[in-house]
Length: 123
Image (cartoon, rainbow, N blue to C red; front, side, top):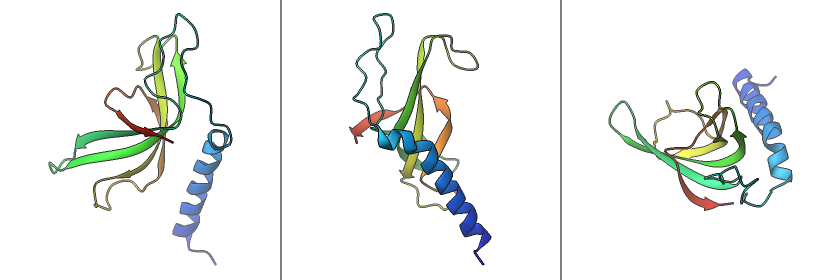
């Protein structure tokens, strides 16, 4: 019989893999511009990103991830301004050795504007 903790992790991994499958099969070129009235996105699919923050203990943490999706919001809605690019991220690892932080890799289901990210490379 399988260990329930192992089964849960395997199920989560397979769900994330299926969610990312379209991006793994087809890798478009970086987007230049969709039209003259839309700004070019700051990041493209496949960009490797990093973000820095300080945890509750004052430790500097850097998290690393990959842009796996993006969407232009003509009418922002919710907490996003109008005419904004939002990005979907697959976080891969961070600089903390603490096991209390989320297990990596993990997929960020909620899009972000990426205002505090920096590009560190491209896949």
